[in-house]
Image (cartoon, rainbow, N blue to C red; front, side, top):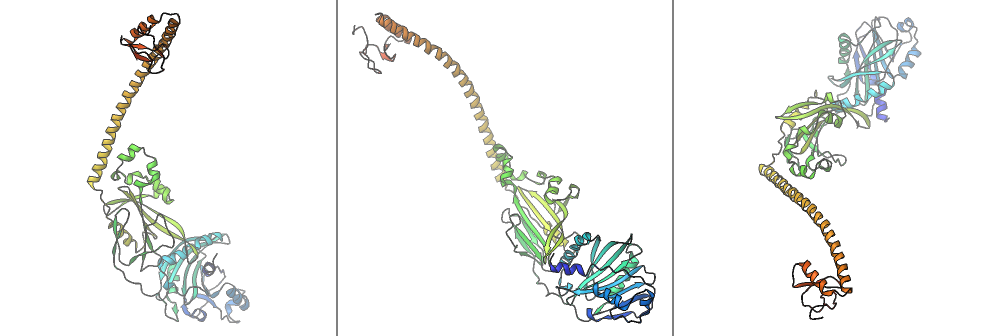
Length: 489
């Protein structure tokens, strides 16, 4: 855990349980170490660090000056008070802070710091209920509602904590008679409002005012208007799926993130389609309906019931609110996020606002979304694409017909080949017969038989290789064998 976080935690976790009875005292207390004064109702028992040894409240509650002083030093307490019925207790603590003034922090950043306490409280058996911010006349306070076990019962607490002039100051009301109701809230707020610091608050330099401008997505051509006092900022590292980050000049830590993805060109998307489907698929058919709410919930890590459909600028978007973990000033913090997603003409567009819908800057986010102008796919492009697809289908049909005829022809040829095999076998048998006839001296009969089988009296066959030769030739043109003809005989 970072040193900054340890300091932040130390001045928020103060639990001091003391018995008491009513005692009239001055209503104004100067806490010089804190550089402030504070007022309490007169019907409260009050101890500060300048405890007098003869203070009657010490003996009334069996306390000693040394014991009380040691407790205050140990727990960084500078004022401890309680009401006459011991229903609640008021505790003022202070430690040095690495920060100078909470006035220099935006609400977004301060809320992030406070959210980091929830995990630490839980590890100590303390329940972090909720938190708010409160603007005092001089200081900015975080209001933290908590509860903790207390001798078999539950003690509820409301802490006002701030950093002022380098000091982390905490004013806590702990209730021992039930939850913090409106009357208890009024008591602690009235006490906090009486605080007066000796020095003036320190603020950051006034933000630079900027005008609205148009952002154009270089891939899709989609445009939207970035509101005034928002600027495009560079990112700390290369982000594959983030195209632009816009930060607020007025609210430190607040940003809007935009990204687009060409779904139409994704290899994983195309891999699920056949070649024909890829050719016939046009951008205009790839829209929001390629997703389900379950898909969006899986994408953003939330429940399907938390995914809604909203309309801005006559366009429908999926939306979800989630809590993400981030780091600020080395402290892990919880950051609320609002996501909007739309798919149109083959592009998926994502917008992210790192805040809640209750933020005073959420309207800027909605105005940005509402100004979006999505590119229109040219009609001639779609017609051309579909025409190519239709031609392709026709070609496939023709090829299919050709294939059918080719298969039929091949089957026919197969039957012919089988017949040819039979004929060839017969021819071989006949050639053997011819040779046998030749050997027996019946040459002329073999010649006539060959010419008759050819169906042409002007053609004879070679007695050696069986090649067809012209009638009257003396030698075979293929093997060179001397032929037996009428003249040769």
